[in-house]
Image (cartoon, rainbow, N blue to C red; front, side):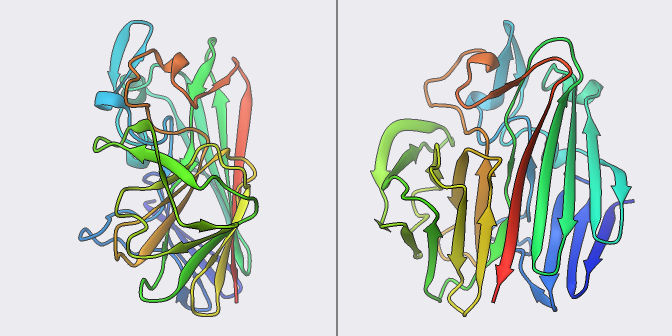
Length: 284
């Protein structure tokens, strides 16, 4: 089974077993998610694990050994198993195997639960440590939403965010240097120049929710109580906006330490579980 379709009234959600990725979400025939276009971006809504963002030299270090692990980890390229499915919900599961242990030498279980409602989509990521040692991890969501860049677009955060964000290096690493953004109170206007210098990363984010004014009388409400960081990303003039709740973030540009010292990683004890939830609500 390569794809699933969930339904709730006029709402439809199409899921792929590769990456446990949302491929389409519509309400009353209105498509909300980005359709892949290699000219801009060839994904829709990857699930990130066991890292978020870029790793330095596309690798991690564990106990003196080096493992090849690049952008956002291996979950987007992994085939998940359908663990449970109903008319409006589905749970997809990934466990460590020989391939993943060659990239990330830890025993884990990663499940992604989707629940579809009339106007909302809820996503729950659960991680279980199946090993006998602590499990370092980061996870996140990377959904791209359709926008019309010719309209007046703006994001309003629930809390006052910092008016400066980290500078992202050409290799995707986080610099200690920062740059100013055009934040007016809690409102951030989005223009064709907003992403000319890479993503806007709020690390950590003060908010656990925001609203995107789509400029057409509709809005998208995003609630992410289970995530400490937030990334907004697009390409200049592109007709999509990614709203990305993350628990971690990319490597600092001078970082070359063990994954247990990597900033932003969470540690899960042997046999323990952790859950990270987010909700996307279409309004209007």
